[in-house]
Image (tube, rainbow, N blue to C red; front, side, top):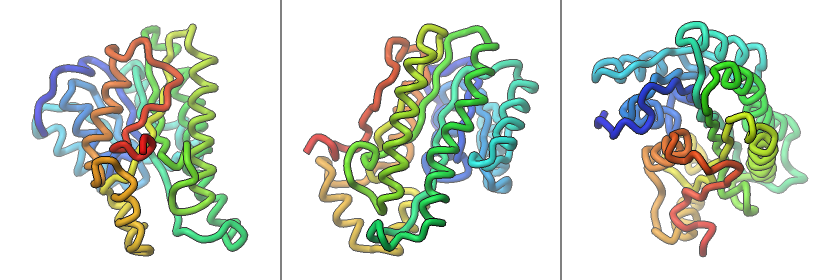
Length: 257
């Protein structure tokens, strides 16, 4: 883990979906930038391994297992973080779920419900409990939610995923408008194709998508998870103090071409 510039020094930051992919990369990047990271996901083993990795190079990490689609688990995780560290300064709500493609009328309703539960209800649950903790902390605070190019275009593996990622942008803008005067900034990342474990699963189901995803990028490649994490770190930092309600593209030019 490369030592950063202190961008997030002395901040307590919760990261959801931290057991792999962009979330795990964010754990490393945020800790390197000086944050105390609260690593949250369902898979405890992977979280503990990441926390040990962070601690081995002088970082500070806490592990809490929770399913973002279950409000009581999110409430407990936020309470544990505040109990241990006394406050919550920022959050990167990155946990997500996708599903194999298919025409809308052929999509199993259970798939739609699962995609919406994690991507939309999960963000709702997290902000619903993170925001009160941030307000009680008394300082400026920031939330970053992970959306996608599928949140601004009809792109992605399924109609359910497109609908969910559009909804994340709506929740982000609504929360930014509601809490701007109270010191909580809320932004979203419009993420392009990224080489993660979840992406690998999608490509395993539909190999032809890889060529299509790369072709849509102006840079003709997929992102590394760390590239997304660095953007989230900036939005969580005080250097982005006048940025709220934004849907920031981190997509290699996908939405520009």
